[in-house]
Length: 509
Image (cartoon, rainbow, N blue to C red; front, side, top):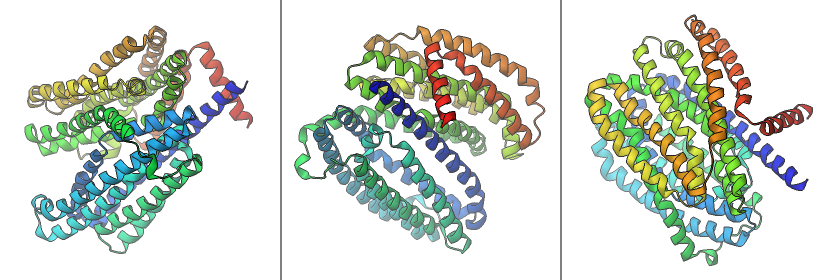
């Protein structure tokens, strides 16, 4: 009975955290939609372009993480689950030292970049001081945040996603209000960097405070810094760093190659499709991106049967998300583009890109539980091998497909091919390492796919009649409800019973 209650508490915490993370994502996207035209109107296109340029440079600073975040999260979460709190303390203290050094290095690089590299990147001399100020403030913000990256394993172990998401929601809203006030009063883009710095300091302080509340035994002391842990963390993280680097190449290279081989106008059309697919994967990852602590818990307890059941269950959830977004984009993507972007881009071309990108990127999302399993069993080097292979394959294909097929060639090379390689290789390697069986998933997924296809065919003609946001929202809700209702087909009788019991309990409460 106690074990059952613990499982229900864990499920409730995960679902609550998932709900808050989805709400956080929705609010973030909503603020972004509203803020973009406001900033362009008040700052002017030139200053806003400068803000975007500098932001794209500064965002690459997170590569200084070197993949350590995944390693620290895994080990801390594992030792907390096994109640080895002294070992968790050693990992956290060792990680704080590492991240503090990396933070100092990062800020030193920021100073060098602002003084020596910024003049080569900024064409207009009048914008140089502004750009340097933004680089310094943004670099300081990220550098101060780095030591707190030693704590995420605590959040994962205690399932504290809901509180963290709630704080970030409040911070996002206050941030947006502050930006509105200062920019409306005539302050420039430097104020955006200052607001971001202040917001980041407060959220980071709360984050650290919350971690100490979750783990009262946590102590910060140099005596817990361990050389052996340092070696182990770097050994684990080197493969994650390779994966992060190759992912960065795949995320940026398609845009660069389109600009080089097609035109800058084609980049805009392609980027609109990318934004929609990114919104979809953002929702999906925020809702379901917490497999690592669950898998780590069962692996630490040597419950491989539970690990297999959890993997299959999350794959089912991911497949439902995949079916939902792909069917939605196929049916309503063209209407959405017409209402959102109006006549500013080639809708038919953007729609074609959207479908190819959505299929590829959601296939990649579908395989994320396999990546989590490989990280859990310390075999994530296989994911790094795959990432190197699919990156090289995508680039080589792009040199042939982009000049010949334009933006569709880019979508095929960097999205569809990568997704196909991952959906073939990752299930195979996990099955080979752990002996997991996917037949029960494949059979039920096939039946559910037939149901989704029938639903899509039934509403195909109605999709052409969408002329307003009201029409789009109404039809979207109907399709969403029907596809979610049919998702019971993919679950076993025991899983359906657990889901129904959970719903009944929530209704009673």
